[in-house]
Length: 453
Image (cartoon, rainbow, N blue to C red; front, side, top):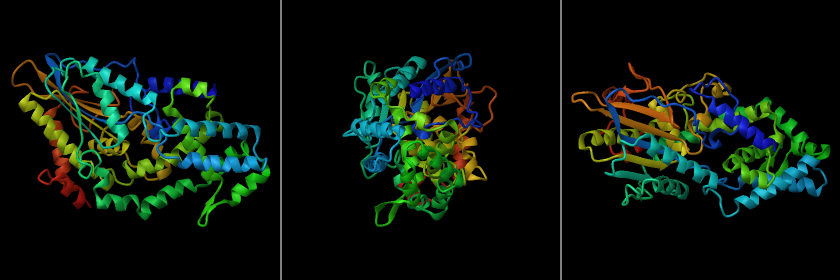
């Protein structure tokens, strides 16, 4: 199958990707990319005499079924209409078959984890245990998830690996109306305004309505519909009194479904003969990914300002991570904090931390994929891990290493022993940054979010 071959090529590409070199743009699935782990990578050993003793993990849920039926309904409606008018090519008829099967696979599962997503989360958990034996001493692990069923299930799967050593481990949640730590994006009026702002809407439209989008949509549609229907689609099909569906709407919907297929295992794709890869050239995939991922870059990425409202909303979580680390150092009775949430949680946190490749702003929005890669920062199962180390010798500094999706990454902080940083240097850098942004620790999380500008 062509799709399986492309997945193998993608895996090979990701496995040879040893640093976050964001100049490459061969992306196919953006934030819907299935989690990729390079089993050949080597993690840097801790300095002599140091051992890991505490981990703070913030993770996204695993690969999921499509969250809403919007795009499959749109695609199915147009394909069915064309078929009723005998206006589908042979490729178009097969596309209708595939969309029909995809609807059946998704039915009653919208937003839930797929088996691939469950497997990926379990593997991340097992690697954490295997790579950090000195951390998990059987003391206490604090686990929190959002109220989302897929985040809660992700947390439950993750801690399954820990239950033999931690029989009393369980997942807690903030009350539904107080989920300020992990769903901070729902509690800031200023952020809500920003998401709906004219600046964001116009930026998204500039890409969606770009001549390149129209041109490539036309090319893709030519292989699916016959001439008469292509003319109708170009003019627009009446979806409702105030909505016209045009060629680019259809093609973007199909591309969204192509991305969503990454949530299924190769076996599921093979068994159901699902292969949307062949409807797009490499160039078309790259551009359409730029189109559909632009909203991520603008709403939960660095956008126009890497310290803008869309990033500052992660401040309550960062403060909590700092305080939790300090408490673990002093009390020495907590092995880990495990937090489970969403892309809207992980991405702003990564940018606030200025993890390499997560905080770059471009002058021209069309160029954002050259500096910011959703597939590298927030794939399904994305995670940020703070790992703290202490020395066997007294009066030695606490060290810290940060992993993004289990890869060692640079922080904008001076160190003589990368990827290890002095905790006090890290803490001071982020405390200074938060204070400079007016995000002081003496505010409650809800106050901070409501007062953000």
